[in-house]
Length: 243
Ligand SMILES: Cc1cc2nc3c(=O)[nH]c(=O)nc-3n(C[C@H](O)[C@H](O)[C@H](O)COP(=O)(O)O)c2cc1C
Image (tube, rainbow, N blue to C red; front, side, top):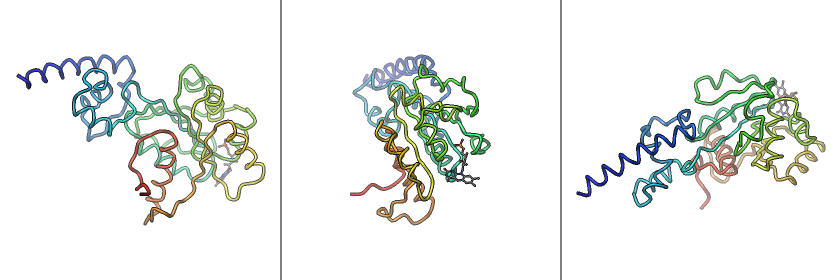
């Protein structure tokens, strides 16, 4: 009897999950090979419809912040060295995040994202969806952030899509993370960072950490990316936490 009840309950859930998914435009979302499509849809809605199941707990770990609606994330890539970090950052993103990418003309890496389920925007397309506050992006990250783009953002200049998405994040008071890459930083760059930090912008340059005893460059990169995920509220297991 219990089995029959469960079967009916899950069938209803599956149908509800599918229609809600369409409503929230989830059809575009990439699903990891290890998670069958129907299960990933369940993860979005099981919380609302059937909170007492074990499956809820299981998906709470897998797709933690996609219960109601997928996070909209913008990644802007500018012409500083460290573009590889942005590629790895995108590669490790959980499948439920709606990811938009814009690459500045000085960071020519567009082909690197060809095989990934992301929306690519042209740097000069000021009319792109993500250039409007009404698109309701949840978080924006500029990885790496050149000193040029940093300076423009600090002055309120938005003459291309990367600087415009940053300006939108600022005016909408949404999360904005900048990963400035330069060595050393000039007093002007430090002043710009200080100004933006005081406005709530997260200034998080790719700084290495040695306490986790990484044994390769890849592990070190995963550590840095994991720190960025932490700051953006993205669950991950990219590095071992200090205990
Ligand atoms: C090989 C190379 C490496 C560069 N690395 C950096 C860097 O690490 N940080 C930086 O601020 N600018 C760097 N630049 C300079 C920027 O690419 C330049 O300031 C450019 O105008 C940035 O444009 P954007 O902010 O629109 O991407 C580099 C340029 C080249 C050619």
